[in-house]
Image (cartoon, rainbow, N blue to C red; front, side, top):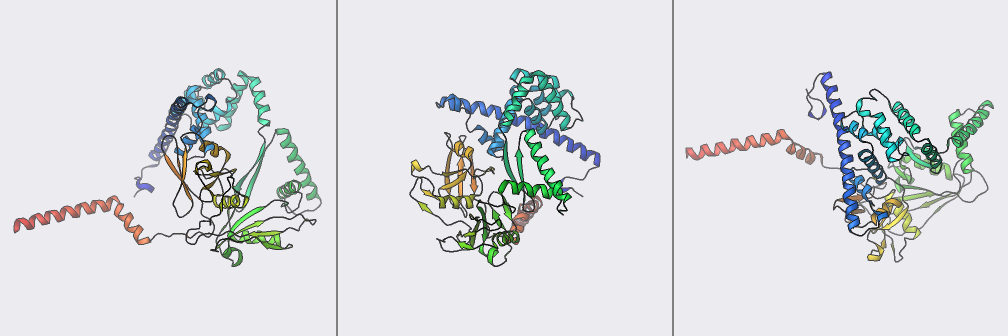
Length: 474
């Protein structure tokens, strides 16, 4: 009997020992990646300096190349490069612990992050004081590790810790992340005093309503109050356009093909219909013009009007169309250098997020794949939605991009080292699913299996022997 993947079944102790050994190897490989990343950064900076790049711009695009190689987002690639530099140049003890399996990559990241505010000399001193490669943190959890790192950092440089707290307040922001079952996480990074005050106000409001007999839970009341106080409406939608991309069959015929809500992701068909029905039941419905021949994709935008009633809003349907058999949005053309509003909406509906591989950032720039100053047209085929960072990286010397043929919009990205990556637009609702032929796939899988190849070799040898014997008998 064998475990998954062809691993022979062993006793439990040996399995645990192998799991531990593999974990140690993962840590060692992470340390090796850190060393390689720093070496690559030095090579790229040297080449950029030789090419005449200004000193302030040296290192541009290095994190993005590391991100592509590691199948990570560009933002994550930059953080990985920063982690590698800190480990290799300033924290040798932490790096040694990573290489020997005393720390994993996440815990090494925690130590680097908690000493980021220190000068290089103080950071090295904290690294030597903690020396995780000596077994200081054997059995310690993440919180204990963080507490020890913060204590050592504050002791070495209390002023930097205070400055870090002041700087952190400038990074306050609000973000949105998808959650299961058509929910989302609306997260606010706030100074602690502001955060506590907001939470206390919502709690008091919820407790007051609960005391008055409101059947909703405290959590529901706090969430509803947050939405109402932010948007000014009990329903939570006011003066904001919400795009909802769905097929006409889903909208009008009760089909089960999921829809897509830009900025969130895929949503169930029934939920999409219910959203339109509930939001627009007291209002009129209009339709924007069509354009290309209809082939089955409908886009809907719920856009509230400027109305006086709290529950009154207009629902507008903006129809988009795709080519039959591919799901590719039909093209719009423009002689202008800047993408017009209609074409920008088309690119947003098609690309959904930044088109750089592994980057899920929201679209901020509408980019000419072949630059406009090089003759690139302002068309949907030559356009791509990018985040701001990826658009700036694309303009770094040595980076090239070009469209390539495909069933859906596809572009190739080539980095300064000559490595190529391709990005295909995500499938829109209603895109036909190409199902592989089961028999053909099974034949291919069998033909590629080691046992089948051995059988073919044995059969060939038997035929060869039989042919030789027949020749001798003749």
